Length: 306
Ligand code: C5P
Image (tube, rainbow, N blue to C red; front, side, top):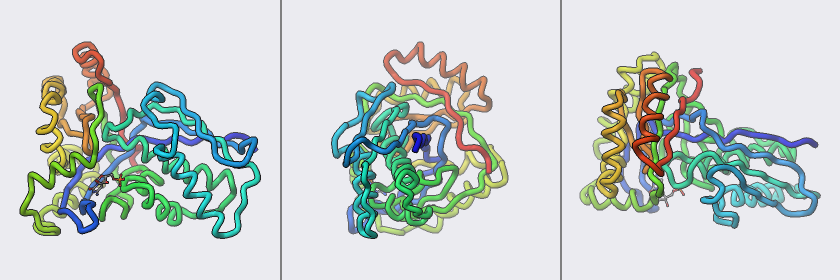
């Protein structure tokens, strides 16, 4: 069989509402997510020997672990284990080549996207015949963002992020992404949220928060960008900005460059400026690349309207 080549798109959170801390240590969230045209690429082929080999190239290859810490490797191990339960034996293993274009520890879901693509790729390579529900259930075992990234597009994620419903958005957002030359630990940001909300009771105020989510989904479905912008909130943003005040300068530069809205992506440290046209996005990106030497600056678009 020839190579199977899959894109693994990055995600941004158009909203990320933290509803409280759960007894399992995770946080209950409500988040509207959208995939981007920025993507890693994975090529799957049968291996020459038993076992899965993972190789990595591309602009961000240096930041990616090549051992079991890599989510691609973990996803492959999970698929093998699950397939062996139904008597599947792979004669040749698999060779996975990852081309890394999404920066790591950026809040853009890069590792999770690679894991989701690995589930889809090995399902096809090994003719396992698993449907999307089965893939999403496996995805939830790999990370909170992985189930959404199995299908991508625009979606609502609930629970710790693993319960996903599609959203039929009619908007395509033009973005400028900017990330400093360092990453952020998601658990550290969630710990910051805990410290800032010592009295938080799980589920308290859920009604008001869910109205924000519903408002955002309705605006996306109606294709009303102005309305949608008003409902976009990231509860982790004040925590990340508080921990890393050096992000403020980029925020101001995006705003003064005409961004309709500036948001931290997930737990950060990437920030996105939502621009009113692709031209405006390109212009601001070129200015920011000059101004923020050593930072990563990228123009991107959100998922195609459905
Ligand atoms: O699920 P994932 O492994 O991507 O999560 C990484 C970490 O982020 C978790 O160990 C947890 O500290 C934090 N997290 C959380 N609540 C969520 C998602 C992630 O506390 N809903």
